[in-house]
Length: 213
Image (cartoon, rainbow, N blue to C red; front, side, top):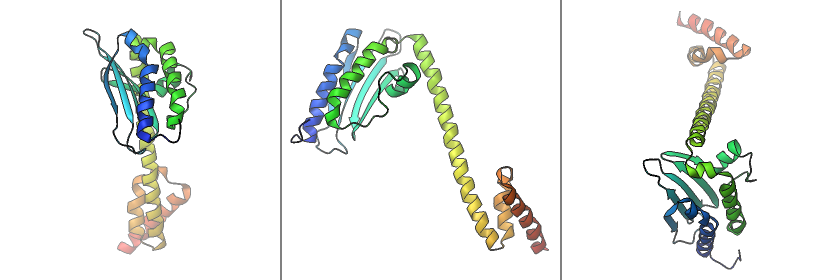
């Protein structure tokens, strides 16, 4: 888009493009339930979002939300309380048909990106938009498994970080010949110590006991 336009004007224009690109949703029973363009002119804080919803009688509502803030375009599907990212489904269900690896786009790219994503969703996400029970059951299962694995990865990283700090403190204590502190630090993580660290722990336990006599 031309560089002489303000950020706010770009947001108004690209939000309008999003509305046009996703106009096909109305033919599927969706209605626009929320649409807003920030009144400001700050690329860091101001952007836009649009949200459509399809409510089926006695069934969970199906939703699609687009938001563009801080140069990031996020597309989210929802089925009742379950929310899932478009690019996540793109990877696990559609063999990366979008062709996009990330979500960061400058405003001048959105006139090309938005219609492409809309066309992909219209062509490849019919069962998602229809609220198909089997499709959403699969999505729920995969998303739960992904979240669980992500939590396990975070927990493992936190454990490694904690052990690293313990090892550093133990090394400092060992250099000061503060063997009781070394024992206190290393004993709880004895099962993950290296051979050298185990020898230091045994040495510290032995000499710490001697000092207590």
